[in-house]
Length: 196
Image 1: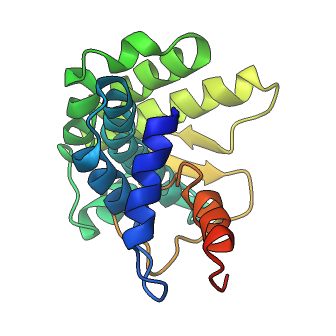
Image 2: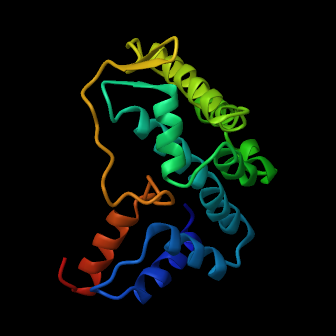
């Protein structure tokens, strides 16, 4: 991030109360509304556009990691119980697709993976999104020379790694990446002489 972007983030974090921290997404939204430099604004906009897609994909993948064995139908029920449906991921992907500058600034692995995640999101049903996510995960793991964490046989999903429970307080919209805000916040608190 450029100097000006850091300055805008600094200004937003300075407004933050010491006893109530702002959510990362709120910090970036406020920084975006305060940013006047076109290049820095585009960088902030890219984060604001891509993170909801990453959030949705991560939530779906987290659902897959909750049980040693489950069916595709169980996963569809998990998704529906959270108030989500087949249109959730496509809606998350739309800002990425409609941001004509985002994909053009990416290259290599980042570009390829984001394109693949958009394909996962655009699958026609929750079941197809799950299957596409499993294929994506398998390709990533294959690239790392490792086995996939999950296998699908017929309609049954089998987890090959320990179960990872979803946090009870995990909201659907919670960002999964903080883009170094926690480190930036810690550094600024030290600079301002505030308790950590």
